[in-house]
Length: 116
Image 1 (cartoon, rainbow, N blue to C red):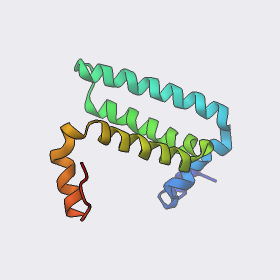
Image 2: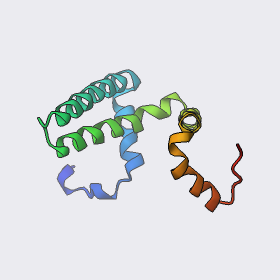
Image 3: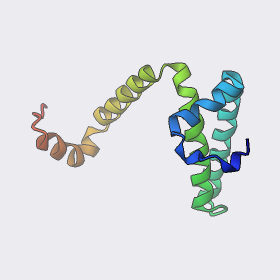
């Protein structure tokens, strides 16, 4: 079958993201994730020095996000999300004095009491 005649736009992103893991397996995808993260690191450092464009950085972010979407489910995505939430709560708590002008109005709008 000619792939150029297929309506690939009908495939959902979650389905497409599942394909490389099925084709290659976890270990190769972990290595690919590490490679893509290194490329993003390089692009960000180059961007800071104006040696590459924002488009270059966006391309590398897209690669890393696609790889993360493939690999994270293999490491318990729910647990990872819970850890992310804990770490962001800790960040807000630890930096509350600097963030209070941003945080307090949101809490008050939501009807939450602010305690000492």
